[in-house]
Amino acid sequence: MGGVGKTTLVRNVGGEVKGFDRVIMVTVSETLDIEKMQNKIADDIDLNFEKKTGEVKAAELWSRLSNGKFLVILDDLWKEWNDDGDLRKIGIPLVKDEKGCKIILTTRNYNVCQHMECEETVQVKVLEDDEAWTLFKMNAGLKKADSRVIGEAKKIVKECKGLPLAIVTLARALKSKGPNTWKDAREKLEGSELMEIRSIQKETDKNVYMSLKISYEHLEDKMAQTCFLLCALYPEDHSINVEDLVRYS
Image 1: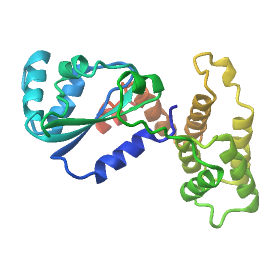
Image 2: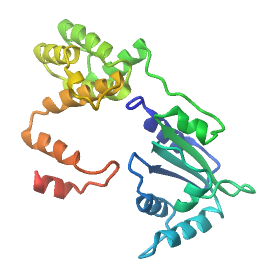
Image 3: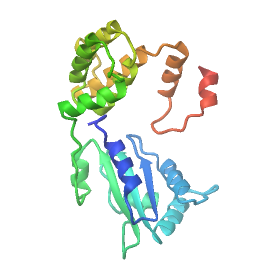
Image 4: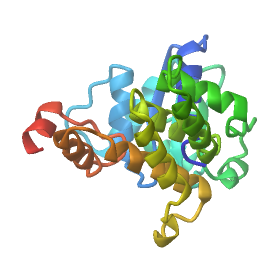
């Protein structure tokens, strides 16, 4: 399930865990880019590749990672990997004699965890109603809000179905807006026509999409909207040069 908080959770785990030389977090995504992953890992362990082939990069990563204790977080894995073959192509050695890599992975597909025989599987669930409301209030700044805004806010939170991404996105987009704006957002959520978008089949994905759409519509500056659309052209987890973004928008 997208937008439920898997990435945020493992990022926090990586920031707090002890006993490793380094924690390396790599985004896999639906379109696998081995070279990009290799370069990211190399940057995290201060390894300079210069101009080398994928096989040489894999060998150098394997050698370096085999001589230390590392936690590698593979975020957003879409397909099953062969524990040895696929990891070896990248250059990730599993733990042997207390050296090598421990792996944490996130995925939307439970079958991935089963196929890869994960030692422990943690299902990240949507927020309970009270948790969702607390998160929304925290991001929307509702302490001194109009009673009409509070009423609309509670209905909007209900439409978010407990998804943190949808909750935070909408709360920040509607913060400091007037009652009519809140009402308009709520009506769009309740009457969304996402069934017309055939590629969006899961209800949770529709909620995330609609929250992003409303957030985009409430950007007050046309330049900001253009920048947002330009960002959507970049591949997932791609570095975006701010100067280029402003120049082309």
